[in-house]
Length: 486
Image (tube, rainbow, N blue to C red):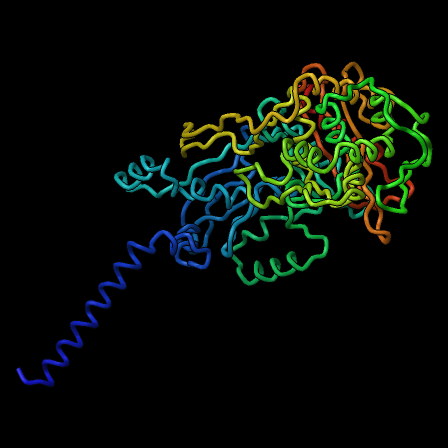
């Protein structure tokens, strides 16, 4: 063999070996990464040609795939789109959000728990089907939460989260403004791209699930955390005398802070229960200042601040209690201001822990994973995250919260014949916008079935009329009634 032919032969062999190595690398080493890459259109195209599993609330499919008359064979549809969009998210050619994303492997049929189903489909030459996801959502509670937000005046922004205190099951998660996932699931990809751009640029942020994705100052609802820290210190109980009065002088500062109504909370010395009843700023500023940033941060973190806990639904934001706050900031944190921020889910976890003898349960929204034939493949078991407070402290706080609903700022949550525990919150924002209205509660107080957090971020309500009890109380009441009446 002459030299030119030998060189060409060696070159061809090298090219063949390089091709073999590259193919092996792509097919075996990077196969999973390429398959999971959201830019992989072949995977999405294949998914569109498969019957995706249903997302269930009770016996109703709130998301399912129906036959279509185009190349993709199936169209994703949402039966109650606006009400459930923050939870279901959407399934489109360009990506997924919400449950559609977090449970994509199950819904698409690629989850390892569906191996037997896939094998049977292959042997029987049947079209593959995805598995089904059963949610923890209670339909009646979700209806009440959604209707409450919809009835707020004007183009409102807000969220409601309801938990089952003893398990962490998410019973309701509603957010407004919202969007119609049917439009994003359309096979008209040009229209989908245009709508996606419009929604992402919308200043109202309709794609955000405000229940878990929006953090704002929790205002006076955070006084429950401050009260918990005070009682846990061993120096206070519900009947302890604490500072009242008109104003509190921030430490190392020339600034003083008064009470919401400008009053003196009933005197210079009042009980801790009365302080919570009237939501006395002076009391909780004083307590946070006395306890210090470390004790306050430890208590906040025991309730779940500075971490995330909802593992089966993406889009969470972290509720924050910074440990580097100076004395004035620490005092202000006692009333849920300064650098403290929280999601409605986090504040629901706080009241759920109080309702559950101090145990913080991991929240979850996926109850069961089911095969296409609805047989149960997996079920979520309740999990305790932490012991935020002792059962004695929980009892003290419950008693205080019951008084707040009976004859304090939280009376709008009263339910005839049912003892309710609750707390209002009105968090100050920037001077050029109205405050945020919060409300947290649980019921029945002696045997809790549901804990609720309501956030009204904005609405067409005059500034003087914005209050947690006035705006959030009726919504929380409706959600609690929907659960306990079943």
